[in-house]
Length: 207
Image 1 (tube, rainbow, N blue to C red):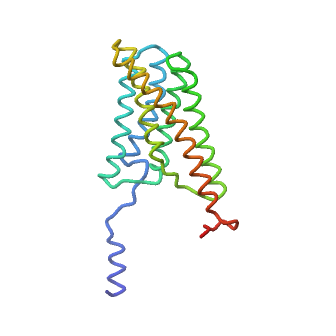
Image 2: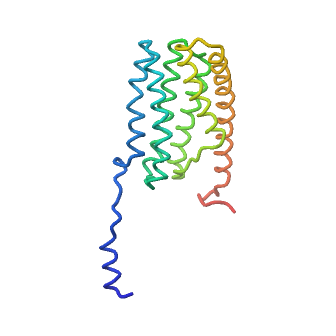
Image 3: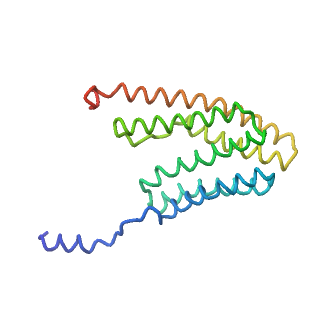
């Protein structure tokens, strides 16, 4: 192919550059962040039907943003950072509020909040030290997120439905959150130390 044809093909490329703030998945993630203060206010005012509905809506946006990112091929670097930050911000804030309202044990919130803050600090340190940007969640981390979501949903639902199965679900979910928070925290620390040991003194990967 001649140079003229190549230049013509480059100028005729119809694929536009995506604005990360205008993609559907990222808009849903931003919506989830915006729901947080309304959810907190509903819990503090004792409007548990509203708070449960808002929490379900937030969960739906979390499920849809990943699905749309794959279907519409709109994965962006902003979305990869924004989605987990939105999850941690929402869940950690809700756990703090539920602890304040004495709806969950203090120990659960301390473990959840402490783990999330620790992970964010380690990620920031690693990025500053070695420029590492990829922090893929482990299976334990994903399971822990599911347990946290179930725990919050069960706690809010118990304020609406007085049924034995709801109380049992709340107990199981909170116990699972405690166990998985500890396990995923230790696993993350082990993974970080293992990656750190694989770095040679000059910063290159040891073979």
